[in-house]
Amino acid sequence: MTTAELLAFMRMNRLAVEASVSPASAAQAAIVGIAVTDAFELVFDTLDSTRKVANLRINPRLAFVIGGIVPGDERTVQYEGVADEPAGPERDRIRAAYFSAWPDGPVRAKWPGIVYVRVRPTWIRYSDFNQNPPLVVEFDARQLSPPVSAIR
Image (cartoon, rainbow, N blue to C red):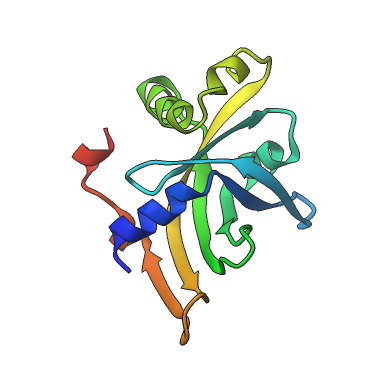
């Protein structure tokens, strides 16, 4: 499994289960629509009144499960990363990536309280149980980081 193959698999899946931790240390999860940048950043929009936003503003570490929802396809990505809410040109860049994946995104951009969250990966595990033996490959942040010039 190459990073290019990993990126292609992640982009095939537009929904992910996002997990965060509340200030009371309770696990909380939600389905979010995602876009995936060339730098393996996950981008999603949400309202600033959601639990996930309150949680990530206190503890920016998030986890996701991507894939595994198509019957008969037992491939998934487990993703851990650190979230932020970029401003300025970085916000414009991640919004463009999100709008590319979600053409209805500009309509939601007009909603009061909409925010754009970027998550940078710290660890990813790809698992393919469609094959025997299964293929399980882990990637750390160093393997997933493109040169800074590729991010801008």
